[in-house]
Image (cartoon, helix red, strand yellow):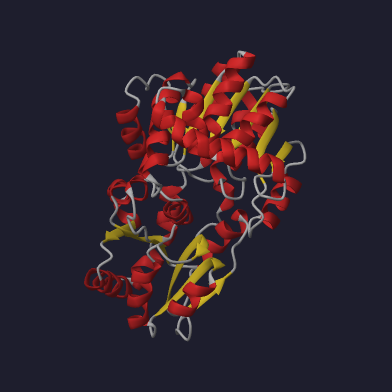
Length: 410
């Protein structure tokens, strides 16, 4: 990687805290890999999720033998801590209403995982040079640990959390936590321009060291676009789960009308109820189980059009740039995107890479008809799209991040 030549992070200790795991937080994983490449000693504190991601997480651990991983148990399996964390969360949600300026109650009201991370930090003998927090439950533990050890901390905002579909009491706690902690962080990185714009409305006095770091992936992850699919136009969609509320309901209804001309592949963990209702006995639809990220990126070479279908279910969903749209973009696929503000803005900046549409049956049908008419052009221009997108990758996107880390640890 280009960064390694000029910058030496040897013997620098970096601690990353996340309230999920690296499989479910690919942005955190990219930072971990980047820090390892730079020669840093990396420690990650994450959670055992006991779900489909476990096998992927084991593979990540194997791939990163130099990283110190600590997985916390936040289920009833570890009963006493679970009871304590649950009680703390419940009490804090009441106390936060009474004492809205108390940062500890605010943090504990956000998620019981804050309590687990804070407990780990209090017990740890680690003296890192920098702490990076991913997800709101990690913000206060990172801040608290940083104050205790007089070291810098940073926050990454992959999503605009107050705009997510969460209970209003948690929403107000998250908003308050961001207002209190974002201005105190050494920097805040945002996963889209609109996430930064909205966050600054909450915490007005941030901005000096803030940066948009789009979620692009490593250039080497993608195969060149020289092999062109044949036959029916091949559409692809992926997510952690194939389930309700992801825009699939709308697209599947329309795709069924064109099953003679379209092949749609869904990649993810199929949820039984959804599959029974929407996918049983449907022609032209393939399901592939959830894949390791590198395999997923290589697989994109087999398709023509990537579906970046966001239902706009909440504010965050309309202003975030999903991993989907950036994956299709880097792979050189033509993008069929729903017209959320973030996706429209992205395609306005890259007009030859795709089209944004509403999810109404009428407009979706017309858009798919247009795609079918342009099939040959979509295929012939694929290599051009791939080469256009080549400058947009994690290697280039992460340069300001590395410069900021260098500044903070020296």
